[in-house]
Each structure stands twice: as C-alpha cells, then as structure tokens.
Image (cartoon, rainbow, N blue to C red):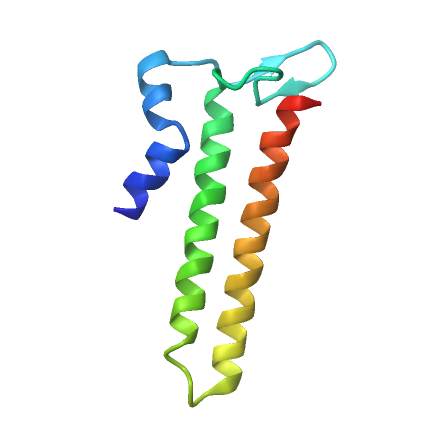
Amino acid sequence: MVATSIFLLAGGVYNLLEQPLTLWWTGERFIFYFPYSLNEQFALESVFIMIFYALGAVGFLLTYQSTKYAYSPRQAFILLSTGSLLIFAAYICVEYVFTGRFR
C-alpha cells in the first residue's frame, strides 16, 4: 500500500500515460525537472521524487520502530535520530526539486 501511494503521489500514472522525456539538454547542462510549469514533468523528476518519498517512508518506519525499544535507550535513540534524519533529508530534497522549477 505504501509503494502504491508513493507511485501515485510521485506521478507514476502521468509517466505511464504521457511517456515524457527522461531529461533535457540545454546546451550547457542537463535539466531533469520541467522549469516554469507545474502541469508537466520529466520522467527522471518523478523517479527522484519516488526515491525521496521512499526515503521519508523508511524514516517514519524507523521512528515507529524506535518506540519498541523503551528499555534500551541507546537503541531507541539511534533509531529515532536516524529516522528523523531520513525524514528531514527527504523533505529537503523534495523541496529542492519543487523549488527548482521556479528558478
């Protein structure tokens, strides 16, 4: 269920129906996101977002697992801090891809 929701939220259906380009060469660099438009995307952008969402889901799973180690504070702290770090990293990466559209 989590994999299906990640696929749907990242635009997997759009990739299957529209078959967009993977990335674009501008003459100076590759672009993997479609600038200045919210209704179009490249396939690579969607794949990156799927990876970042999966990273966040693993972070939430680790923070949930940390509650099971109440009598082992070191293990609980390691799982909680790792999960929080993954959630934060996923959030920053998704925001970076999203705000990259408006530069």
